[in-house]
Image (spheres, rainbow, N blue to C red):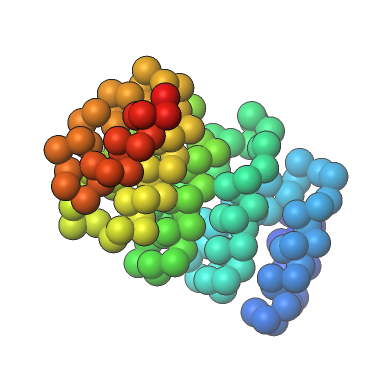
Length: 160
């Protein structure tokens, strides 16, 4: 089955895609989640289109039947993406997928890696913050030995 939104997107110039994605954001149909997933998963797609779709995925309640495919795409992007901004926005989107153990493991790996980009580490920490307290506490406690992350982690622990 073809996605009607993709057919329209493919007819647009790159500079028109952002506005179209924002229009689709407010459509009252679950088909939009397949559309956003197709965009983020397509490495050949315009990077700003992918980023806008990732921003939407990060903040909305996504139907449960649509989340597994999007979660797979996020894992692939975070693991393999070379475009820094696309990868960083995918890490931001993890906040909306804390029920997926593979994605939480990925967030933990990123936040624990002192060689990882600071922004990526903070975005991974933001996802971990959304976890239930017991699971979150275990990860946060392990980060107290990280000189850079310790003040941020300590603040979160103090607020729990």
